[in-house]
Image (cartoon, rainbow, N blue to C red):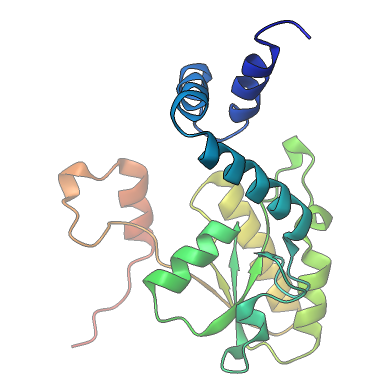
Length: 200
């Protein structure tokens, strides 16, 4: 092995993280090797353990160390409502930022025929089985406002309708405290099309 191969290998390995380019990966490598080898060893050990032990919840598909995640395992959650999100990070945002007490279904992506991602890749057969059980009365669609997110939401709304389940879409548009002059045209148009009656 040539001198420096391990250093280059570590730089390349760190580049797999989102937002980490060659320079950032190099800075991380130098920091771990020069200043914090114990943290590097701890990071390596935790990474190996997480890669080996973290899988998907058998009900909602989020990431968990157990067969069922803490939300799905809780008897205090309202199982008549399922919120569909694109990824585990969205689930965490809703859990920490709202008072939602239902359960979830995590797609791990969006429908994207151009990329070869269809309903089977998102586990929608599993979601359909949950809808067939007749326990669910509302399917909350919390996919993004991208073209793929909208197409996925439309597909899910059709699936809900086929099972006589109400489909709702989270509101999207002007953020709380936002000034209209700083809102882009697409967001503003979406906010206008989703307007609701003001109840006084």
